[in-house]
Length: 268
Length: 312
Image (cartoon, rainbow over all chains, first blue to last red):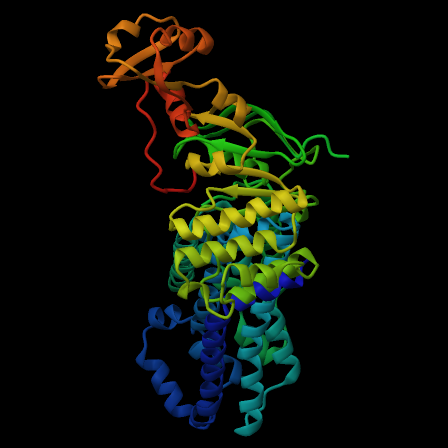
């Protein structure tokens, strides 16, 4: 692995990293800040919940959730859908840029005409993606803990640690898939479009599976089905299927990406 | 001791059904300056990309420093300096960042960075996106030369540059050749620059190598123009039937110019049938020879040397 390539890759994406991290940190902070107002007014919460149809609650991943718990509130307002979309797009764009985008712009030649193997380049770029994922997951979890301490909200450290761990796997599963696609493509835009479309389709599948018993089986095809932040925060546990699905994706897709990059054309 | 620095053995690269390069076989020995000539789209960039391991060959093999080029083997790339025709650099970074980045990948500090920056009057503190094409090309040259490589691969290095910058770049390349004995593989469609520095030339046409000879040989084989000014008026038609003479033109009433394809000795003797006032024999330039290769195949000559580098 080459740290020069890791640092250079992160440097190319420094502005987007700053914006995503700032946005996520602010979002996390605000959600925890106004959580006590809602938690202290359960009757109002129940009324608000009744205002929405089951379909609408399902659309936001809020079916059967307890808005009064920190996990339930964070899940509905932030982590179930919006966080996945924000973090997903952040790593999809990065993954698209570091191989397909770099070839598309011709700058990959600068690196590959130096004494570094393709394996080193592909591995180093993936490590950069992992570091990027660590930073945006820390930008999610740390402000929740800090804001919890400031606004008297009990945020268990072990729950945050688990949320960070599973969040990393979710991020790397999405990023790894985009990275694999990037290794096959000549266009970062196409990578973003395909991955973004798939993420949207998965959200739709999850929604459909939640509103009708007959379509429940479809949920298993969606990553949203395996992402249970409310359970992680409230019970400090994650289902085995969560670990398996995201864990396997986070390992297999980058391996495919590296294998493909070692044999592909590198020319704009 | 390396026997060949660059070698291709029946190298073929296709893009789906499209032609890239076909059955290329040639070699460049240590210290040689090899000109790779051909119009845009002939396959020059494809050949270089195969040699650099950027593109896998469809069939055949290529070798650098006698070692077969493998996509994932970068062990000899530290011995190579590469200047692409269409330089792509990270636009948000400065020239100095590019220099440091490449140095960190090579694991050594550059030997001649300061000298090159000074010679080329380059400002490394400016961002790439603020640089003109000429300055980006200068940066690419600094990055390629600063570690004193054994092999320079230059893919239309002066395309799109003004003559002054072209001159500076070729001065530096010529110095490296003279000083370090650097082996050079120069792809170009600008024949004057090939003629200036190369001692061996390969001509590529539609992906195939149609000629490979020393620059001197290729020029020696080519048309010469024998211009004779006589003491008295002559008629050009009188010399049209001389064996080896392609055509004779009347320059003025006492001067004719004969294009001699072969049998120079016989042609000159036949032309000297009257007392002469002046005699001049000129070689065709590499440019004219290049056009000959195309004309011989009944094709339109390639586009003139208005620089359009890039992939082919």
